[in-house]
Length: 224
Image (cartoon, rainbow, N blue to C red; front, side, top):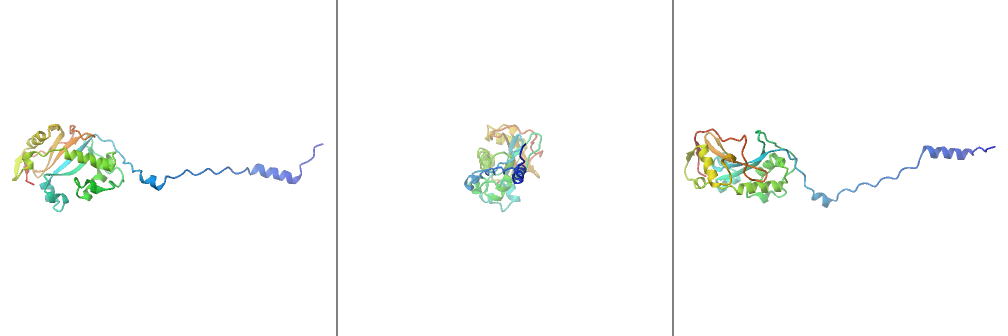
């Protein structure tokens, strides 16, 4: 005849079954150190685009509407407006991330002496390039510095008038590596406002697609 378990032992067994021992607490995943975090640059949210549009503003017209612009104290022929991601269908991405831009904006003062314009160009266009801020503005500098101003315009000392096609011929002659199909003329009230150059993602000339020159029969060009 089997003996019954003592009541105290039976209660202990029941409690053990209902309350299994706790599992060991996993060790927390280590966070990156402050030093490591500082080396991580925010990624830009690259959007699909087909090519860049390099916009070079003709300084007399730019400075007429921006008389206090830092660029205008040097009286250049052209000032860099921007390097803009574009699509062949005429659309373009904008404002693709909140990345704050270059850590040292003054390192690009040779192309953007106005830090406000640099920030605007980065926020609106550069964030869509998929490049870091420094890489984007280095590419813009390369594109800008590689463009030659036609002597006719660089030495201009009086107002002249040319057709858009004549202007493109001048720019193409001064820049043999850039075909006419990669150039476009912008004008306002029949005055030259900008020349635009279509570039691939390595800053090499590429056809402009939907970008067209202004339709003025004659474009007036004022001296710098």
